[in-house]
Image (tube, rainbow, N blue to C red; front, side, top):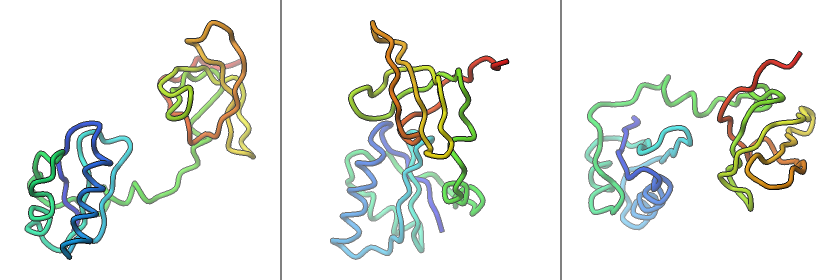
Length: 149
């Protein structure tokens, strides 16, 4: 059964790691912890009972509590289905770089290499415009661009 644990927004991964280490150290019956990228302030914890989730999350700094109820399997399964990331992007879309030197910078897609799963972008926030090629996994869609004719 999966349960939703409310955590401090932006600290989901840290809370999940503490829960994981407490589980290993104290032998709680926790089977998995899922940190969805698109769901801020919440993590999913798989356990036999809600009591085990309450015990393991007790005294964890970033945990704010557990939501009542059990999560349906359909809601969890969407995090395990692989969808082709390249298909959701098109030329002209505005993206944000998720990691690296250009982290949190916005850019416009100027080319997509579907075979290599890469995009070529131009940073909008820099003084000089130069193309950068990145893996599609390193950017997230911010705004759909206008249709290219």
